[in-house]
Structure formats: C-alpha cells, structure tokens
Length: 412
Image (tube, rainbow, N blue to C red):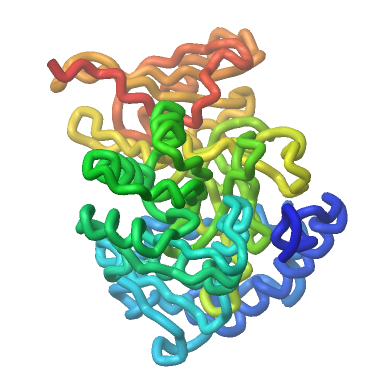
C-alpha cells in the first residue's frame, strides 16, 4: 500500500490478469466441488481443472441470490456452500429473509480495503463508520478493511445523529463510511448545530443510489465521496476511483454480465444481470447471480487501474410479471428465443389496464419471412400458456436497458 494504488494487482496488464484469474478460477471450482456439499452435487460432472476459461465458466449453471432462502432452509445454515463448518468461521450474519452470510478468518475477508484506499483513506487516519453493525455484515466489511489499511475506526453505526456529530467533532475523523443519505443527515445536523466537523472531507458510500445531485450536495457540504458496489454474500464487487468513470471490478472476483433469466453472457456494452464468481476460500460462490443489472464499459480507467469496468447499478434483473393471473419469467422469454435462431433479442411488453392485459413480444431479427411471426406466437403461447402477438423489428431496435419483460400497463 503506497502511492495511488492499493497494490500492483490493480495495474497489471490485461493478459497477466486473465492468466492469473483463470488459474485461480480453475482452483476455485475444484475447491468448491471438492469441499462443499452444494457445489459437489451441482458440479459433479465437472472434471478437475476443466473450468479454466471464461467460455468454460459460462457453461456452468447460475445459482441466484433468490435461491439461497430455500437452499439454506434445506441445508442450514449456509445451504452447504461453505468449505468450513459454521463454528470455524470468524463471524456469521443474518440478512433479511432470513439469509445467513459467512465471514471467513482471513484479514479483510470482504476485500473492502481496496475501495477504501481508492477513496483516499490511509494508515494513521480515523474512519467514522456508519454502516450498520447490527446483524448484517456491512459494518464489519468496512471496519475490517480500515484496520487492514491501518486506520482507527469509530463504529458509529446507524442513528443517534447528534451523538454522531459530537463524536466527529471530538475525534476528528478524516472521513466517513456509510450510506450517502445518512452522511447528508449528519452534515446538515452539524451545520444546524453550528458544530465544526470539517475534518470529514472524504467518504466511501454504498448501500443505496448516489444520484449526481446528492453527490454534489455532499460535496457542497464539504465531503467528497466515492461509491462502491458489493453484496452481503460476495463482499466487494466493484468500486469508483477518483477518475469517476464507471466502477472498476475488484481483483478478487470474476464478473460476467448475462441476459436476465439465463446464464448466457451478453455482448460488451449490453445491459444484463451481474453474475459473480468469488475467489473467497471459505465461501466459494460459483456463478452467483446477484439479481442486479449493469453493463461493461469499454477501455480502462484514466486513473491507471487496468481491470474491467462496469457502469454501476442499473436496476434489478428479476422482471417476473403477473399477466392475466399467471406469472411470466424472463427465463421463459429466453426459451422462446432459443427455439427460433432467427431471433437475436426479444422483449415482452405488457400493456392495457389491470384485468385487460395485452402482451406483445418484440423480436429483433434480420429475416423477413411472413411465417415467423406466427411460429413465434405459437411458441409464446406454448411456453407461457398465454396468448400474445409478435412484432418483428430490425436489429438494434430494442433499448439496451437489460429489460426482457416491460410492464407498461396503466394502473389508474
């Protein structure tokens, strides 16, 4: 840890990173298959060392966050996904659901030191940490990272605004960790009370959206912030650098962007679901579907970090919609596309008023065959058990927003 970068991994060449990550991927899949009950069963047919490329990885099934509740109920507490027993972990957490999260014994197990460092935190500084320490891992994610860097931590947690202001005035922290909305509350309360907390000049924020207007408000109040993206299962996935051009992928994960409802990677720049393979030795999640959407940015960051970038959080991938009393899933639309190779992309649009639903499947294609609409409509009815119309459109006509099902009904 010196200079502008946390370590040399951030600036290695693309080829060097790919070779190292694919070797780590192969070992991680073998570890998960050999030492966890869940992946041992799921990947039983995968041979040792077979998953050593992105194309091989794309052939494995996706385990989605939405699956965890049932998996953990059937095999408590972690669904058979950890390589060590619960009593061999450092900490255990409960997220809403409940879903239980595992923290291994490693230093900085969630790998948040990298994003804290990018946000400007250095050894010898004090971090005012307002991520929650209650039940969920967010507070300890940042706490352990700050300690790995060499920062002292004030564990403020959430709430008690006036006490937070008093502590910041007395302890003089260099910066803040927590949600951007709570930082705004603290800064505004300090201004209201006439309390000087101008020491708090930088921040790492996450857990909620950071629109440009809120970032500017925080800056005007004296605190410049960078944001990170992670989950309670995976830890850090991506983070901003001072260049403020997208979010750079963490070095401890392998990320794919797939079409919602499938495990199929999309083209660079196309919006899809974030699927992550973690290199965490204690909790080796393989092709874990986060349910969040994003897209890959071309090129590398001007800050000098060379890893791939994503645009950040762009909505949720679970677009399951109830139509005429029946649920239609993104995976069903993907099934229709697979039945018709003439279609490159499809989007189901639901219109009408409640109780009078109309669904139209818009399909990108280069063919002009008159019969294609009829055959696709037949597939639509066969797969969804609902009647709908089909509209053939030219390649590139559909919006690049990751939506497979669009609910455009009027609920007036």
